Image (cartoon, rainbow, N blue to C red; front, side, top):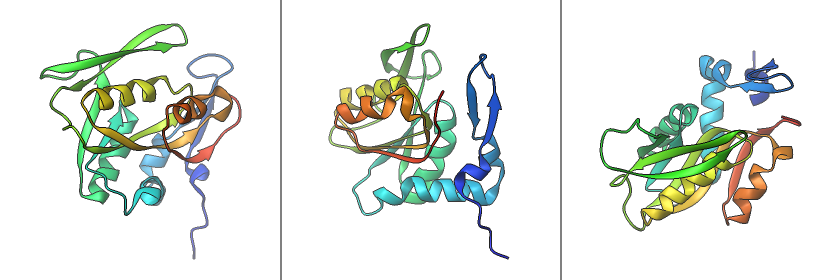
Length: 179
């Protein structure tokens, strides 16, 4: 029998997490299912097949899972972009806005070479703040982001527009209305 599930069938929605009024799109159920996980990885990399990609960068934390799998499929290396203080060697950092305050992400200062072509991967695009910070880190190392790939886009929150205004190609597998 053919499996006719679409990607959204593998994603669980949890109401009022982490705050009241938020509909949390939980991709851990996608990761747990071998067909769903394979479907997501294949669809994330599909638009970039045939393009020059030297490295895949993933945003903490679910972007590590997805980005690592995409890098493996493309036979490329993987670079983590982590929360401040989590990487052991010399880093550069980028601060960005959160809903209530600021946060900082880092990348090893030798993770990329000038001219490297990088695919940025994460599970969810909301405000685009973390992705924007990741893009800035990649560019500060002299590399170029060839695209940004996400499983879920929340278009009403405006992240896609932010990244596209930066000149980024944005690929999202599915969209949900609201927050």
